[in-house]
Length: 228
Image (cartoon, rainbow, N blue to C red; front, side):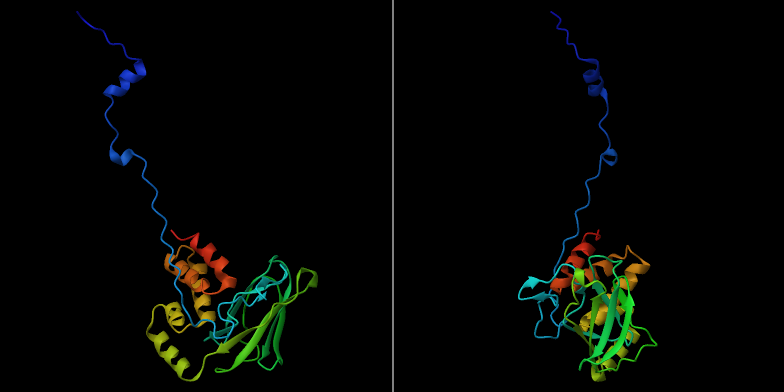
């Protein structure tokens, strides 16, 4: 007795099709890089280390108040350092103000955006000296000025050591990180990313620096989202 088997045409066709080669199969997405939050003590030299300069009593200030992206007291090597801050509206005009440690106004300028490179023709900064800076919103309805941050221009033996290390290094950002020089570390990584946005080493390096302060941790998160 003969038994006849009937297959639907589509099923019968599949039985005789060769299996697809592995190369034709959809590749699984590469796993995301593991984020390592390194703790780099020493970027903030103040007694407030670990606390955001834009917080009072553990609560955030007015949402319109600018955020200074810097330690309460941080070091800079450059005599024309770059200052970074954040506002709720990047078109909002602010006044950048730099004063001596005793409160004497040294330099002031109005601008928009979120950073300022200290001009070479502004009053010169002295190695070993400490200054205070802040940004003041033109419209007080959006919030007043945040507490000023201190910037220490490194001098003496540490400046000499940095001079020597920078001459022999192809990665100045890493030298600044090793010496916990906040302003130049951030500026160096940012310059590298402006030139090459896909520079993964610079992206991870800046994220690691940003991770050190509560006020810049959201910036670290944003950098890590672009790491691949």
